[in-house]
Length: 150
Image 1 (cartoon, rainbow, N blue to C red):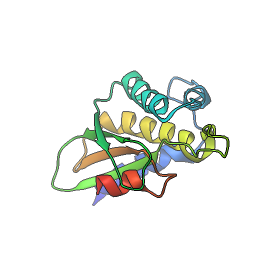
Image 2 (image 1 turned 90 degrees about the vertical axis):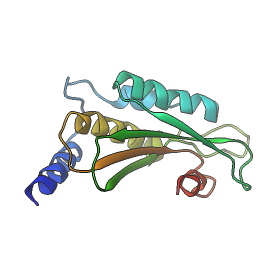
Image 3 (image 1 turned 135 degrees about the vertical axis):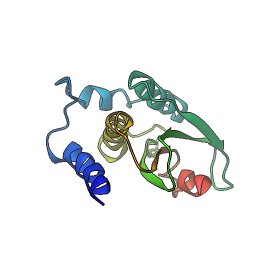
C-alpha cells in the first residue's frame, strides 16, 4: 500500500505547484509549440515533446466513421506489472467555423505537456504497475481517439 501511496504522492506533487520543469524551465514554451495549423502538425508536436523527454512511443492510427480524417493516438508504455494505470490527455484542437484550428493551449496542449512531464518523471521511478500514457487525437470530435483506443 505504501508503494502505491508514494507513486500517487509523486504524481500529485507534480501538480501542486507552478508548472516548471526540474531544470527551472517554464513549461509554457512547450505549450506554445502546440499552436499548429493542422492535426498532423499537432501530432508532430506531441512526438517532438516525447522525443525531448526521451520517451519511446507508438502511433496508433485509426479511422472512425464520424471522423473526416485519420486520427492518431500517441501511446507511451512505462514499466511492467500486473495492472495498467492510465494517464491521458488529448492534443487535438477544435476546428473553428473558418476551418482553422483553435490554438487549444489551455484545454489540451497544457494538459498534454503536464502529462508528458509526469511520464518523464515517472519513467525514472520503479513502478509496481505498467503505466500507459495516451495522448488522444480527435477528442474534440466526440472522444473518437479514446473510443478507438478502447
